[in-house]
Image (cartoon, rainbow, N blue to C red; front, side, top):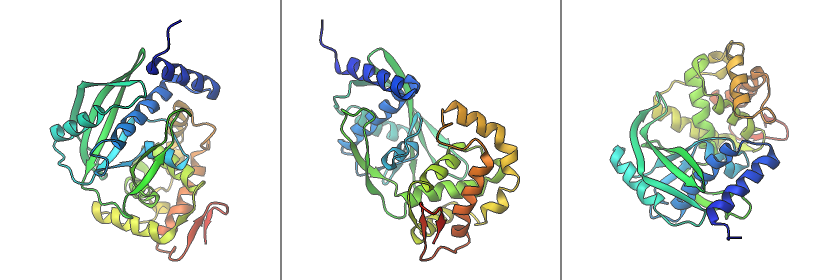
Length: 295
């Protein structure tokens, strides 16, 4: 019997994990691949210039969710697509013994513009793990201010035998701020279910300093030129309109055990959490998880 390669062993371990957790193997392959990107960033010369944000960052706070993208903020980098692709090519060429191989010839950059959120570059790429072929994206935004400053975060390995990954990441107040301001700006036109889901899960598992969150929201609204208003006003009637799409998204991502079935419950919770901040009523206060209120 031949020894298993690292790629084969990782693939089998992911299959076993998927079976034991009743999850889709492809979902875990996607997450493992994105971890591979971070593991290579962590040992590359670019590790001090790229800051992790988005869905993958949530794993550092115990709120891992399905995603096929790595979101990064560049501290000092041109948003020229070829330049971004060149940096990612260097990162993915780093050697890490996780069994993943990245097809560097498959790197395909394109400019993205996501309305109010950011301009940047999306780079598509293909990776291989044993017999699996995984397509993923790395979204790199440029020019967004970060307040408080980036912090070192630890992303735990999906497989127990894999080491944790330490990279620069968004501080939690900034993560909340971007999601809350986006919800405020888009109002009832929003289809960013993951943002509402993230607000729900994070605010139910972490205390938040009110003044830090207020400062982060000020940073985001100033950068976007946004006028602050309450979520209660801009989301009036939204829950009923959005319920079918929320239900479909929640089911498709297998989040039934994590997020409420009724979107109205999620929206009301977001309003309870956000509006005191938007209305500048949280100076000296902390969001207390155990009580689910500001005090």
